[in-house]
Every structure is written in C-alpha cells, then in structure tokens.
Image 1: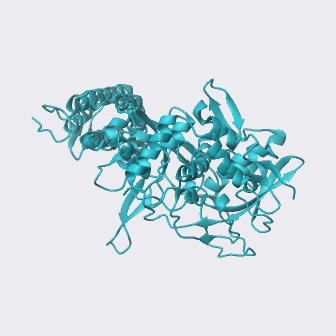
Image 2 (image 1 turned 45 degrees about the vertical axis):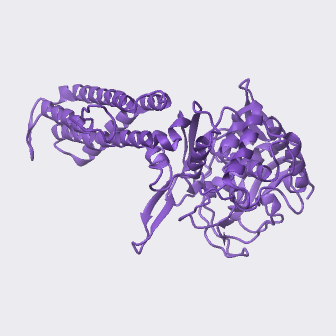
Image 3 (image 1 turned 90 degrees about the vertical axis):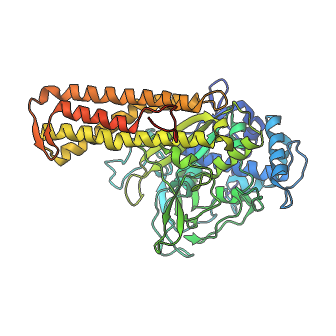
Length: 546
C-alpha cells in the first residue's frame, strides 16, 4: 500500500476567507494563516465541529510545548493559573500562531499524517479485515442510503459518480466526521477485542457547544481550555498521532486526562478503500469509548443532573440538543448560577479569561450549538442536523454580574411558563369549543401555538440579549424592557388566534369551570400572562412586587 495524500501538505480543510470565498487548505496552511480565515466551512456544521476538535488537539499540544514567540518551554505541574493565563494572553495579543513552531512540531509526526500508509494511515487501522463494509455514499454524513436500493433515507446532494466515490480531500473530512458522529455499527463476531457496543461516535452523544471568534485563530484560542476548572494543568497532551492505534473491537477505556487525547478518541476502527485516485468505501467497526456519567474532562457539552439508581448520588450526564429548541432556551443549562449545578468547561474557561482581564469588557461571544438528532431510536441512520448560535457580551460572565445571569435565566423560565401554562390553556380552551375536547385535536393546537410563540419571540430575545451591557445598562430597566415586549407579543398572538377561529365558534360550552366562551378563554389567558409578568416597582428578579 503506497503512501498517498499527506494531510500536512495537501489541501483538504474547507475554510472561508475574509473575502467570503471558500477554499481548501492543508493543516500547515491553516495554522500559518488561521488569523486570515473567518471560520471552517465544510459540508455540514457537524463536520466543522469534528474538524475543530482535531485542530484544537494540535493547538493545545503546541500551546503546552511552545511560548507564543515559538521558543520551546513546556508547561509543568508547577505552573499556576496565572502563569498559564499569561501565556494565553501572549498568544492572543500576538494575533496569530508562530508558524515555525507549529511546522516543527507537526513535521516530527509527518509520517502519521498520511491518509494512506502501509502501516500507520491517519486515524485508521492498517490492514483492517473485520467490520462493516460501507460504500462511498455512507461515508458522507449528509447522505444515507437504505438497504432498499429504490429508496434513500435522505435526499442526495450529489449525483452520478459523486455518490459512488469521493476525492481524497472529501474523504479525509468525512472520515473525521464518521469517527465523531458515526451511526451505530453492528458488532462483528469474528473480530478480535472486547466487542462491546460503543454506540454512536463520541460527539453524537454530546450536547456540543463551542465558542466562535472573529477569525479562526480567535476561535481556536477561545476554545483552548488549557487547564481544569480548579486551575490545575491537564495531563501531558497525547493526541492520536503520538500514540499507538488500538486494533481491538469495542474497547472500554479510562477517561482521558488530557484534551488532545479526548478530542482524537478513536470511536471507530476504520480503513478507507481507494481505487484510481478516489475513495470508494471503507470498513468500520466499534472503537474506544468510556462512560459519559460524571465526565469531568469533556468541556464542550451541556450537563444535566439526576440521582443514580440508589437515589443517593447526583450523576451528571450530557444533555442532548433538541432540534425543536432554540439555543437561547438552553441558557439556564449553559449559565445557571456560578455556584449551582455544573456549567460546560468552556463557560468556566471564558469566565476565568474575563476575570483576569484577558478578554476586553466589550467583547461579544457567540456560543455555537451543533449536533445530530439520529433518524431512528437505535441510531442506525442520520437525522436532522442541529446548528444554532447565541451572541452575548463577555461582560455578563464576570462573577460580579452573577445577578444578571440569574435574571436572564428567570426570563427564559418565564417564557417557558408562558408557553407551558398560558398558551397551553388558550389552545386547550379553544379546542374544547371547536372540537368538544377531542384530545388529538387539542394536543395539535397546543403544540402549534407553542411553536408560533417561540418563533415569534426568537429574534427579539436574541437581539435583547446581544445588546445587554451590564456596565452601561440598569438591570431592572433591562428586565422591564424585555417583559413589556414579550407580554405584548404574547397578547397579540392570543388575540390573533382567537380572531382566526371566531367564525367557527358560535356557541358556549359547559365545562368544569362553568360556562366556556371565547371571551372567557381570552380573559383567563390575559390573567395568566399578568401573573407570569407581574408589574414590579423596579423590574428584575428578587425585587419587591406591588
């Protein structure tokens, strides 16, 4: 098997430049010009997220071993939080990566970055004989073909030969995506190893979040997270190209103690197949995995807590993204009190940067949520891609502004209460009049109106949050401004809904709460809104109400 297509030198990563054109670059080119590229621009947001983790594993490893100037100086356990943050500040102020340092580091491992190699193909298992055979079509994360050749699970974005073969650059991108988000793969009874079911790829199990800067250099630096939440250094970086590739099927491993190892976890044992300069398929089987519960290494996921089976211990698990839920509705999970529950590691990291003055007060940050909702309960097919972002001032994350976070969280909860209580009753009451309480009709109306409400307030909430500046704005006035706007939008939504059905209702109906009519339903809706958004002397959570 001849060596072919070295990822350090060949263009394969899709980026978008400052002139808004998309191009493919090599790994060396990317780190040489990261400050000139706006962001990654692959075929899917999930592909960008997977490749970002690869780039971060390189950036973190280089950060540990080189100063911003490019001089070798490896971090050690004796280096405290201030020293680590000072090194980060030097990188950030430089505004670009020191090219020679990155080139020298990557060149040491050039032999491990060949896409095709007789002994050590990049992130693959040389000579893999067992596993499931996939055609080129199934390597793509945005395409999936069923066993029935007459139908497909998803429409094809490529025709003809494009579905039967991939260029080497495409294959490299989709191979990384397959390792990160690959669907469930069946166990091969003939393969060596433990043969444990590993589930989907690593990122397919997370409610993934990352931060976006003004360019790719900033994005990598903001997501660097070089230390634990307590300020201690992670373990020695051990990305996949510095380790031996495991070959056994379905291997339960220990939780990595460093991010480069975590970000290059070998979720799949795979090997690409090539023919006449194209990739025509691959062989895949289950790879490495470890329990998700209480994973204190992973910094890029939302976490939810629950008691374990004996009811005595609080267990944290990743909170998966819901395609129907806008990212701002996850604000409580992202930024709940600095003392309670558990925030994603990237949030704690940005708080540390903000507290030490590494990020300017006026700096805005975009939190990007990415994920896949698989197409079936067993995760054997791809489903909807989740891609959303939320922009806010880094100033909000200063610990002194914890009350702002709590008040904004309270506003999100009030929006949820409006949808779950006020709008639930409104749609339910109208359904009782139209369809005599038919449960299926009622559920349909309630679901439809809730979706309309969240769609109606989506842009206004994002705009309101983006424009908050704690040092310049009064908290009470900001909360009052939003409550006035959302209550007005909710009232108009209810009035329009009643008007739209009024021609179909010419009667009243006796219910458990007395005689039901459209005016009564609307008045109860108004009263419920008034309870949720009570008028306050100052506005904001915790202020005495009239």
